[in-house]
Amino acid sequence: MKTTELAAEIGGFLEADNFQDYAPNGLQVEGGGESRRILLGVTASQALLDRAVEQGADTVLVHHGWFWKGESPRVVGMKARRLRTLMKHDIALLAYHLPLDAHPEVGNNAEIARLLELSVLGKAGSLGLLHYGEPLGGDVAFDAFFEKVGRVFDRTPQLLGRAPERVRRVAWCSGAAQDELERAAALGCDVYISGEASERTTHEARELGIAYLACGHHATERFGIQALGRWLANRHPELEIAYEEIDNPI
Image (cartoon, helix red, strand yellow):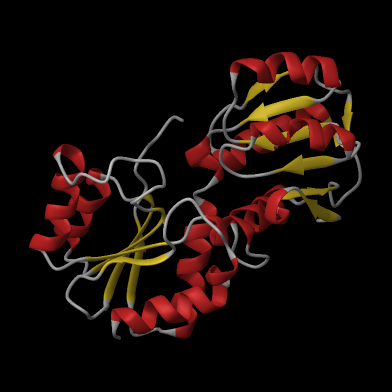
């Protein structure tokens, strides 16, 4: 499959052109022009690129790519080493950032809802990235919900604010969305889930009377890229598609 065709197909499915993003969505490095063996990952780090070389991949497909707004345009040091790895081995790089957070079928937030067994009552905030809903089986004890969150994200969440006795309504937004905490509280949520926390987040959670669970930026954004890979594999069984987990505690 031509890499340009692959990028167009994924971009159309994710409606990538509808997003004003912090980095370019789609094909970022063209590679050899053909995509047969695709390695999925959260971030286009050197570790992921090295795995791609080891596995003979011709395409790397990630959530966090390169060329972010505000970064230095110079191709030196770490950036040069990463780019050199791709260019030397004719490996293409495709990245989809906000489109892969927002998509209602394979997006990070849609996957969080599925895995935590939450209904989606609505969306709010910029581009509708903040989701809110309820536990599918009705309200649950906080301790049981906290344990489930830990299992899904494979780490113990950092709890900020005071835990409620029961969880009736939950809001969530993958990645670094701690600044949506006040909006989540205004929606009447008992718990808000995202990836990161700032110094001010502790005080805001306490004063707003909502429990904030910081589950890790990486951990909350592992699911979308894997769901996208499954979608792609169903459409193109001739492609070899694999996901590589590069540990990241943040």
